[in-house]
Length: 136
Image 1: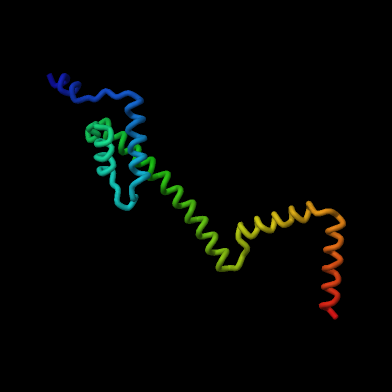
Image 2 (image 1 turned 45 degrees about the horizontal axis):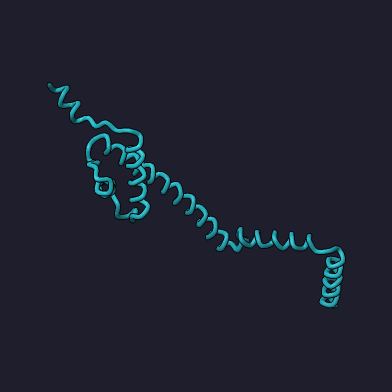
């Protein structure tokens, strides 16, 4: 008799339902404030959207996995961005050229390479004249 009750409580779930639950939870998390959303709120909202009681054991675990996965990815992204910001701030404070400046310099070098030899020679002559007149 106990086995029948346990079987009745057991929920059969296919891969499509599991995938739909995970997608719905992810969609909810994307549009929510990560400072305010909780697993319970996400589960309740997904339950409402899917018209399915996700507070039951097998569903509850799927929601938890989706929330944990989303949070892990968000943390990784935040850490990466914070690292970039830290590097940018340090470069700005130290007066070191930034990536953008370096990229601009590389583009200018490519443009110079494209110029004809004659134009390059003329520019060099102008630089020599400027240098000579400033030293006098």
